Length: 202
Ligand SMILES: N[C@@H](CCC(=O)N[C@@H](CS)C(=O)NCC(=O)O)C(=O)O
Image (tube, rainbow, N blue to C red; front, side, top):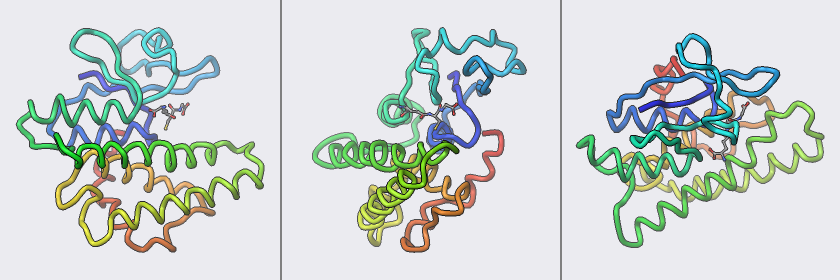
């Protein structure tokens, strides 16, 4: 499966999920250029990423019918429900019942409250007032995440799920910022696996 990514971005969540599910990936690295995102030339593909993904974001994956699937959360659900069972690798999300909707609820919370609050912090032009606000919002979301984790090993229970892959990825971004850390949320660092560093090709 073609996997379009930029190192150290939210695309890492997809890479970790595929790693967990034993799903092989063709890594298609995307690079930033003055004219927008393009496929890195070392992949021996045409460099045009715009026609593949006009949203000009990563991650994106190639589907069997030749089309492209975008949006981290949609890709993670596709991996969990379409690919992981076929790869004989268990469930990376509950399949049915209320548990399923709780999982979707949590994924959406991570997208809209954590991913969304982190993203502008990468913008060096962000005003200090807006930055303070975004960091406060992040703190509130971290509290919810920590309460959700409770005494469990993983966010969705005793088994790893794509929710953890997504949360790990975003929490690991704290390493990029001096003004964001997890000191007030002592349970959350346990969600960041030491082995994510072994994925050093992403
Ligand atoms: N709505 C998209 C947003 C993805 C997104 O914001 N991707 C960022 C990286 S985390 C990106 O591609 N940014 C372009 C860049 O870094 O140049 C999703 O949820 O997947």
